[in-house]
Image (cartoon, chains in turn purple, red):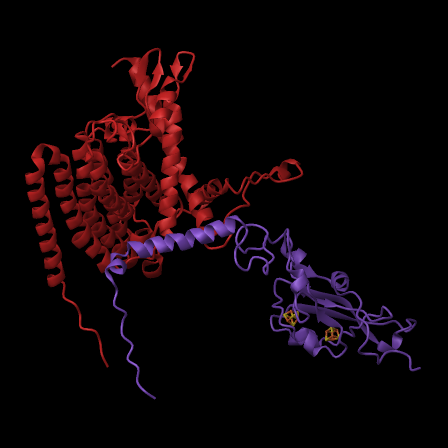
Length: 188
Length: 419
Ligand code: SF4
Ligand code: SF4
C-alpha cells in the first residue's frame, strides 16, 4: 500500500485571525440554544422530550412503554394459574444471591391443605432492596420459576425498613404468572 | 458634612451594592446554568421553587427554578467549613475576603443611572463620583490578585499553588492590555469621570454607535472624526473585553482553576462559605467587568437621546424618577453582556498557558499600543491637516509592519516532526 503522508493544513490569514472561528462557534451554540428553546432539538421526539432540549421530564413522563422485555427491575414472587405460591422455599435463591439480599423463613404446608404434597412454602420471604443489585441470579437459579425480575424500577422508601420487601409486597409486585412449570398439578 | 448628605451616601451604598449589584450575582449564576443547559440541549435547574405543597396547597410554585441560587447559597451555608491542618491559617482565612472586597469596592464608581431629582436637587446614582473612575477600578480590582495568590500559597498543597501562580502571571499580564486599551477611549472623551463619559455618550452617541448628537456628520457640519474613531474604538473594545475575560478568570482564560488539570485550582482546599466567597468574588468581578464595558463603550445607562430626554422629564410629584428608568436600562445592558460572557464560556475552549501568555504579551500589548497611536492620529487629524496626517499614517504603517515582521522573525518555529 502506498504511504500517504498526512500534513497539517496550511491556515490562511483569516483562519489565523481566530476571530472568524469564534463567531462560527457562537453561531453553532446559539443555534443549539434557540433550537432547545423552540423544542426543536434534533432527537427530541425520539427521546420523548417535552421541555427544553432532549431531556425527558422524568416524574411527569416515563420511559415505561419503551422498556424491553428482558428489563431487570425489582425481583418479585409469582403465583401460578391456580393462585398457588410457586415458591417451595428451597432457599437456592437465598444462597446464590451475591449481595445476600434475600432472607427466607421456610414453613411447612399443613396436611389438610389441598397443596399438602408440595410440603413447603415460605413463611416469610424478604428481599432487601437496598442490597439487591438486580443481577437476576435468583430468577435464573429458581427450579420452580417462582421469582422473576419485573419492570418496577422506582423502589423508594423513607427509611431502611421501607426498602425491605416482605412476602405480601413481593406477591403484590409479582402477581400471577401462567404456564411453564406444572409438576404440582393433578395429572389429567 | 451634614446629616442629609451622610444619609444619602449611606442609602446609595446600601441600595446600589446590596439591592442592585449583589442580587446580580445569583442571577448570573442562574443564567449561567440555564443558558449552558439550553446550549447543550439540556433543561438545567427548573424545579426548585417555593414548596407550597408543604403548606397545604395543591401545586408547588417553581418559577422556572429561579429560587435555585438561594438553595445553592443555603447549601453552602450549611456545609461544614473545613480548614485543613496543613494550611497557613491567617492567610487562608484572609484570602476569600481579599477576592470579594475589591470586586465590591469598585462598584462605587459605576454610574448606574442619570440623576434622581428631589425638590430640584439632583442626586447622582453613583456612590463616589470620582474624577479618576477607570484608574480607580484598575487600581482596586488588581488587588483581588492578592486574594487568589494568597489562597494558592496558604493552602500549602500543589494544585492550589499552581493555580495561584498561574493567576498571578495571568492577571498581571492582562492588566497591561486592559489599561492600554482604554487609553483611546479616555483620549476621545478627554475625561476620566465615568459619569461624565456616560453623559457625553447619552448626548453625542455611544462610542460604538455614534449616530446622534455631535458625533453624527449631519449634525456637526461634516466632521467624520467620530465615525473614523469607530475603528480604534472597536479594536479597544475587543482588547478590553478579552482582557476583562482574562482578569475575571472566565472560561477561555480560566487556567487558575481549570478543573481538568488542577482539580479546583486555587480554591481546591476551600469549602462552605469560604468557597462561596471565591465564587461570589468571581461573579461580582464579572458583573463589574461588564458594567465597565457597558459604561465605556456601550453608552452606560443611555438608550438613545429620545428615551433619555423623555426619562429625564418623568416625574412623580416633585421627584424625578428618570434615573431609575435609566438604571433599569443599564441593568438590562449589563445582564445582556453577562449573557455574552456565558455564551463565550460555553463556546470557546480553554487556551493553553503559553497561548494565553502569547496573546497577552505579543498580540494584545502591541495591538493596544498601536491602537493608542491610531486613536491619537484620528483625533488630531482635523488640526494636523492632510499632509501631517498622511505622514502620521505612513509612520504608523511602518511601525506596525516592523513590529509584525520582528514578531514573525523572532518566533522560532519548531520543525514539523517527520518520520
Ligand atoms: S429458588 Fe425459587 S423456589 Fe427456591 S426459595 Fe427461591 S424463589 Fe422459592
Ligand atoms: S436480583 Fe440478584 S441481588 Fe437481587 S435478589 Fe435476585 S439474586 Fe439477589
